[in-house]
Length: 436
Length: 96
Image (cartoon, rainbow over all chains, first blue to last red):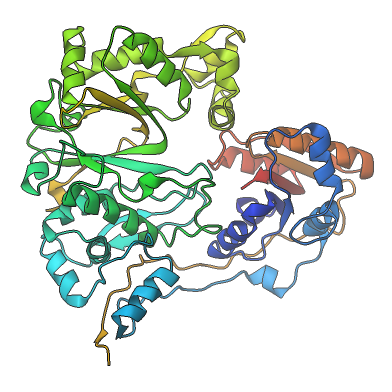
């Protein structure tokens, strides 16, 4: 669409499963008549002959010869609607029409405003009570969210966040933590085909003030604050960005269970290491939320045992190469790593970054390394450019230290650790205190 | 009869959409410079290369040029400026 505005007649080619999304993005950008043409899905892993078959074949959406559609898109004279585009405002009334509880519950489901679990209806009384959890004005803008970089940002106010917090079943005292999530600018509901999800970790005094868990079952459905804060983050993302609807604003092919709720507290008091937020420059007395991007994989380990190095390397080299890990370690594991000489998180992270290596050929064959990292390497951006120069059998490092994070949590019933897709990509540690 | 409730709309505030016009079209692509923009998705380069071959076989008077943005998913103003300065039309693919 940027090229059209620069005066260049253009046609965008997509695979057919993205037809609804492509048309909705064009409309939201005021150019609903943007010329689009479609080939079948997939493109990945197809031979040149198969790709040529698409070009010589039929557009699965228009049912006309593909290239006829492409040529016409670039040469057919414009009509009046093409010239003026589409200007409109979308109404989001503050209150819905009065109705019965059953009808309203159904309305929320029909409009894709929920996660399909029962919600608490956000009545005026409940939202007013929720708003007592912050000193900020209901109409203050908290942040802007969008499901992907090619869609428009929508705005969230304190009131809208409170509405979604009520729906999630949260208590008013959790609201500053939920507002901090909204202020991060990181949606919990990316539209990515790869089924992304965010994990968030809470640090500082707020954890204990509102009764969050960093102990037994911290990452599971065993604590009211953990679960409802994580659920509120997802619901406010769904509704605050204008939807997370399959085929339109959500394209994750497999989906992700972390999209229900994935929030927990760090066990700062039982950890031998610095709390995560202190690593990032905050004071121990500050309360923060940190958001980790990804959630596509989970690996599990116990120990460390005698062969921990081999185990760790196997895990690190098996995970997505473009999505750094968040390691969640039970305090038992953290203390045992200290006994092994890793008296700081940074030392263990450096070891992981140094030792997670694989042949350059295998690294570059990863689909997302090829799509996202390869162009940077070609443009000379380090450390990717050096990896691109490596011979196919030459070992290359998968991660830089800043790609790897460690958080301590767990109930010490087992020396367990987990490796979760959790890139600290957006440097997203947000103050909770600013939203009290 | 069930009690009726008043509840909040949970959706955020969308921006106003401002209409934008499409660029004027040429009558034909004969003798024109057509940029084939490889969006950098996996295998899109191979697809765009097949597209280039199609034009060479079927519309050889069209001057096709392959071009790539610096990164996928990120706007590349320099690339856009080059296409606008030197090109008469563009095909972008294969994107989402």
